[in-house]
Length: 466
DNA sequence: TCTGGGGTCCTAGGACCC
DNA sequence: TCTGGGGTCCTAGGACCC
Image 1 (cartoon, rainbow, N blue to C red):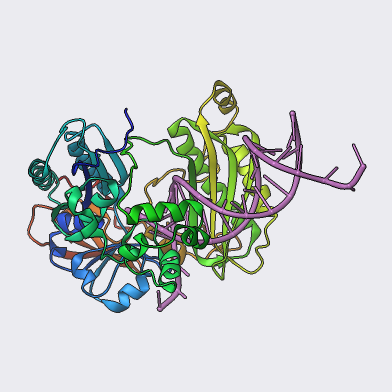
Image 2 (image 1 turned 180 degrees about the vertical axis):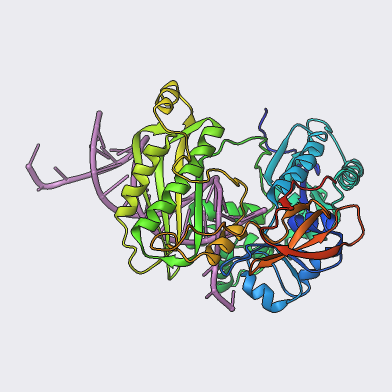
């Protein structure tokens, strides 16, 4: 696939951004939530908001906000753990539609992509890009039932800013001649790469708008934020962005991490958690046909300070045993006495599988066989994990009593089916009960029933078809 | 307000080599 | 042996993005 800077003399780059994506899918599939505040994210004590519906945003709820704060701001919002299989399906539909526009599609996340129209629409003008983009938006709505905002401009930078300008459900086309007028008055924080820290540094020296930044002294900027960042930001501020739209980039690392419901101090418990994360990472390495040379352990303490310890092996590996050996050795060298909030394991320095890796794999037990319920739920969400961690006292399985009860299988928002009542979704669960609302994407708002949470007539179900 | 999980890229220092 | 300069690899930390 050719990789070249976009044609900067035309609005040839599109940025597609599904509006309030996770929350929008929930409202689409759950009629009773339409027009209501919906918050998708971690539902446990330490969860954060992934996406808030526009109704929830009216209460000041936004991405990355602690869920507990969101609950304070709006008690009667629906708080859902997320259904990533459903989101992935919708995402694939949208990306397939994007590929009908041009082969140059760069997917950024489940809900965002860039498209360079140059190959299929050379010499396009504002009228043509508007027509193409509106047609695309209509198709997305017809196929998925969702709205997508689109920005078009001479570069990724301008397309991205344009897509955000009049969200939701909007198209903004920026001709090259107008890009400076558009960028100049915006606060610097709107530029990609200017986060909280850089934004604060710039504000302190009087740089508030993109126009301020464009007029800044390069040497001073580099001194403040580093070589690459400084020169890059200055170029952005001057609307210079030659980044090509790159269809597929190879992953550089694979990792798994978990924030615990309660800080852990017990080394055996931490080692056990690390082993499970290694298994998840190994499964994904194998699925991707890659192995890696560097194993990293990430650890966040009770006070949020974060450590990384890494070890580079002589040969790349995808074998859970080898990854675990390295990870546990690294973990050994870290003081955990004060309490560990988060633990993670990652593998980087990835290369394609070699013949040796395949042979070595034959000597390995299958990834995950140390786990009593391996891969039961590969798509388990942060919310589910936090919920489970909060329900079961850690280490409760060890000292006494009968085997731990089955973990609460139900997470808020989850798709279920009841033998008698049909398809629905979990509205809430706890104290041995689960409340289900029986409705689907094409029914009226449904009725609620409460069951014992081990009711044999109630089953997990796949996402409903749109 | 007390902060997820999965990533990417950059910087800086030290080891090591020529 | 009292001492240069450049390149590459590794480790650790941090900013940022969705």
